Image (cartoon, rainbow, N blue to C red):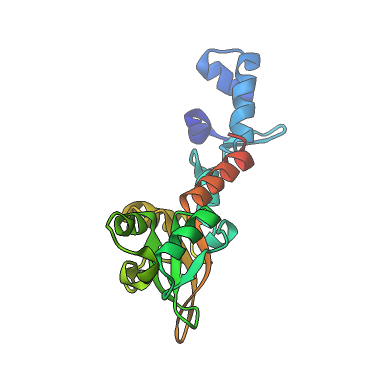
Length: 199
């Protein structure tokens, strides 16, 4: 690549000569570099550097991925639901995080497995404790938007050490939950990236 970058356009024969190799030996390497987009080739002109850095295509694809392309259906509970019912809901929907909403369906908090486990360790009657007593409340809830870059939301998940983010839309009265973004969604995006680039 350095030879092409400094001397392009340059023919395959000229590159081979500089490296003290045969053209046939070099052909597969040049084909890979051309297919990967690092070099461009024109008949009877030669090879020239495309200007892309290794991994640039993948990086561009990652930066163009949006939360809305990979989000899941949210699992929500009302803030007056009991801890017992919230635990049942979590198991029934097989999720690790519940989003708590008020009577108008606006986000008021988040319930994690840890919150529910911590509460269930005592000798309390879980059917009498409403979830709004134990949940993480707004404005301490980390969330994301549908049109936000997926990579930004992924950073938020990691930095906050949480399992899921509510995907919301802003309305004058508050935040409406329209989806959820989990580490599983991020993994799915990572796999789709791998498949699309045939890594």
